[in-house]
Image (cartoon, rainbow over all chains, first blue to last red; front, side, top):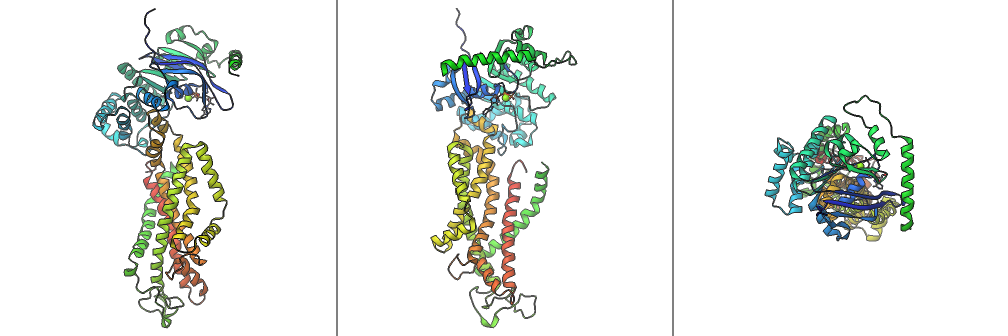
Length: 296
Length: 282
Ligand SMILES: Nc1ncnc2c1ncn2[C@@H]1O[C@H](COP(=O)(O)OP(=O)(O)OP(=O)(O)O)[C@@H](O)[C@H]1O
Ligand SMILES: [Mg+2]
């Protein structure tokens, strides 16, 4: 066997529960290779955001990880002291959030918000950080960086804010970016631009991305691999091309049937089939049963 | 958004009117010995119950008239402003410091810190404030510092409640999460990221609290529990004016008007400042 590249992110059978014992993640396994885009699809409430938060170490306090490991470039996050873990996550990862308005501090100007991180995380001089930010703002096609860096977040449009956040995410050259539905809050025309921008920067910087979305159209455009999540459980994972060519799991097939096609937008959409959902419920109940036995 | 625009528009006039009155009163207080036309304590039975300047029987130099002991009302109001402002600043600052700090901690850290602090606030607020103040002054003894302490001890909860709620709202925002991902410590985030966003509310509350402190001090003076010296206080003048309302209405009306204007100005000034300060409303 040839030496395999160490995955950028490796999640191994991660389970998380709420205080009432309800499982939000069910033995999730998922890996992202360096420089690869892994899409994470699933309906609302499937736990996509939870996985992202778990990786970035910002799970809500009510959610408890009960099993599994997360390895960031081979380093087991669970084994690290909290401080070391924070430093590692801070240096190697970044988030492109869903809502670009609340992800920026409303009372601080854009410029300092962006440079601050570089100075603080990478220990750069203010001068160097500023140059770097300029460069990134140029890469995200912001033409008037002076105005933007002096602005407060609410003075920019949603699309501009998201560009700023993308620039900020790539500025520190993280190895992994978690993009949590980065275009959902934007209007359709801007969505496309932002998506193209993320794809372009991803290619140029060779950054791995865990791309959370519920939009299969986006999956097809941006990712090489896909994990399909349902009720906190990965029901299918595949190369993106293979998944679209031959979806294996009934839920994936149902999901595709429920997605409009650009080629034929007026074809009738089928809601996810009852029988499929019933099958999934049974599958998950069985998995929970099996899980409960060893865990008491 | 509409509300924001309205408050932004109205804030200009409010800011200048309220700020103007407060500045005037503050300057009068600071330079009281220069500003006051008479000695506020000098009694003169020849000049008792002189009416204000526009009425017949008034005397030049006694603009707002005199009280039943012949003391100049304007001079007494000017010197009374000194105590009013000292109490307002000291008590409001103390209440703000304690209340905002605890509110910030409760709102940001949540969990048991929040439970303990909120519990204390609940218990605290179960006491009726004026009775609480009278009780405290009775225990601490009268005097300027005990009035200040009493007001701060009672009213820190106002800051705590509001700042806690605001902080909670901010702590849920994604920028806080982003800062954590970037490796900032919890306390650093609280002070650098969250605090600036609650400062406008702190400023507005601080100003409001100064007005409240002026009222509470007046109430305590009114019931003769404030400063035990002869120094004139607005509450004290009101108490005296009440006794001679039929012979000399001005001794009651002028200090009341001064008090109301000042209290109103403090609250309006705070609101207008907040609208000015807040980057989102600006
Ligand atoms: N702070 C929280 N505390 C407890 N449970 C939560 C919390 N946030 C979300 N959940 C629950 O965790 C589950 C997964 O939520 P998550 O936000 O990860 O879904 P999602 O796949 O990101 O959905 P969406 O597409 O709507 O963003 C849901 O059942 C949700 O109700
Ligand atoms: Mg989500």
